[in-house]
Length: 288
Ligand SMILES: Nc1nc2c(ncn2[C@@H]2O[C@H](COP(=O)(O)OP(=O)(O)OP(=O)(O)O)[C@@H](O)[C@H]2O)c(=O)[nH]1
Ligand SMILES: [Mg+2]
Image (cartoon, rainbow, N blue to C red; front, side, top):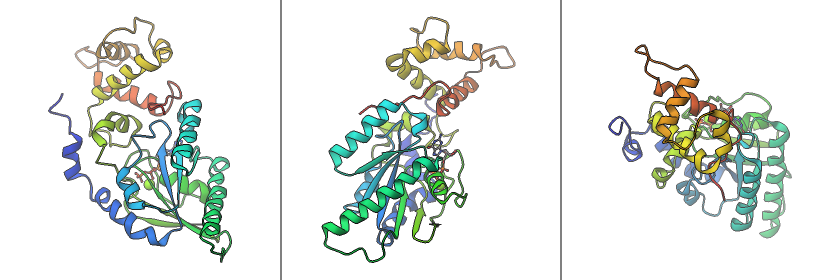
């Protein structure tokens, strides 16, 4: 199993060109925007935060957007928003990126951030309410979806796998607002410690990680933190090693190979999919 797994450190050297280019593009375009939306995943805000991007952004005006709110535990997401606001003294908001009713709040907050900044530096708002923002975040976090929701049109390509946006793209939101969609960028500095989280939420391409290992990680996590979810899935003793639980899961889903053995790979993929779609519940993987 170990041999088949492509370790993050190895990935780092061969990851698609767009991933390497993303950091350069962010740096290049920083001067063209008034503020940056740092989009992170509500289910794993630490794993999806990118310290290398943050270093590039330096003191640029920034709004932290916790996306995929609809898939995460509401109470934990609220605590994250509070913590980020209090500790970093910046604006933060949690949204379902697909819902304009929620994302429109981002526009309101952006105007407030820019206004407050201009007042602070004693500059008059020359063209009121006009601004440009760049959306950054790890692959598949929902950057293009957020932009489409604000544009109320499908202007940027989206897809439920990482690496959909390969090139930066400006999208106009009405007459006054321009948003820059960017390719996703993983943080290779802390990627190893967050590897399972990133694989679970879909920031790493399927096929580039060991599904069984990730499914067992999820089952271990649920055993520690969400026993009630496991009890709902299994009507057997859940206090057994996770690879045995996975076998039970495969049987329950009638997933067998031709030789009548349980199909662990298919069961793992299915369990990960059920988690990603919140079919087993709104589960946050990281707590403040
Ligand atoms: N449920 C839910 N799904 C979302 C949300 N935001 C994005 N998605 C889904 O997540 C997937 C990825 O969305 P994209 O907008 O393509 O992500 P991206 O960050 O642009 O990805 P890359 O271009 O690959 O870096 C799509 O299937 C979206 O429908 C959200 O807030 N809630
Ligand atoms: Mg995209």
